[in-house]
Image (tube, rainbow, N blue to C red; front, side, top):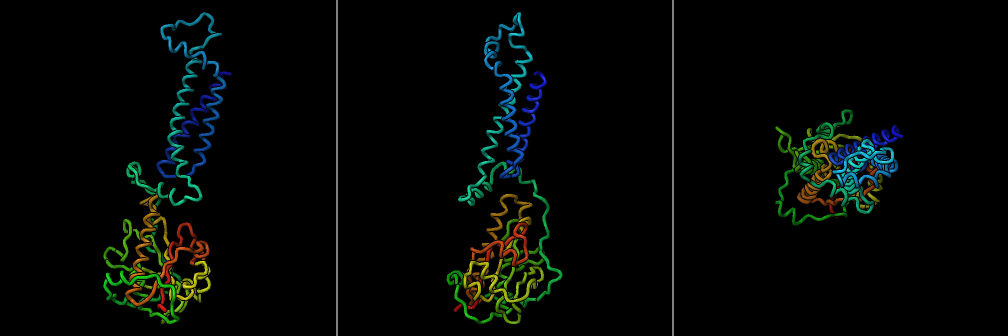
Length: 355
């Protein structure tokens, strides 16, 4: 029996330590679900119940010796009383139980509070990614390494873009005239107009330390721009990637993609009728290695900046633009040849000659 009690005590100690350690890791790293933490917690509960079952008689015999400390003289018949070893074992178990209970009571609410309900996922993420003092103190930790700043398609055919057309319309007028336009005429736009749109989206404006037209948290620029070309002068239909450093297009999939992009966008007709369809994707690790769980917020903010730039540039060029937020993610990711995890499509914008 003594060996069993000792084993249960060690099991309670180790499981409580595992609960504390894995709970702290989950809290520090913002992990929403850690199975080993749950298993450790259940093991601590089982060990605690077993410890209580083996020592339940001491629970009723302990108060008198503790409260009346002046009577420390052992009883003549120690076998019928409570031994010092038994009291120490019981106190050790109570202490471990209290520590494990306090740690679990503090950490489990944090753990389960970020486990979202299906109908409230966005609110759960917003709360989980809020900046706290603890998060600031641990912000020096990095989530992996920073990936390459620019994505390349070395084997793809590269098409140089002409210099962007100067946008002479004032910002005030462009803001006043900006509208979401879904009806387009079957008239091609020029390659120079496409060049101006791409430059407005993510063009480099400071070559010495590459800065772009849209703001980016930490100047990390996690977004990539793909162009599904339907009707552009001197440019064959297909899917292109915008090579930012070279201000050029890389052909990654030739051919008419109107049917595919329209299906991906839930059969919205303007995805078929547009001259070009811009797809913004994000390589998450570019932002995540520094900003950790808050990175997704910053990435979406940047996508909004780029989208507005495209809107205003299209307006200044006499073109119409319309954003699309509803699309089949897997279909669109597959179409672009990206995995949907390390890199995923976030935003779609159509541009064409307004009807």
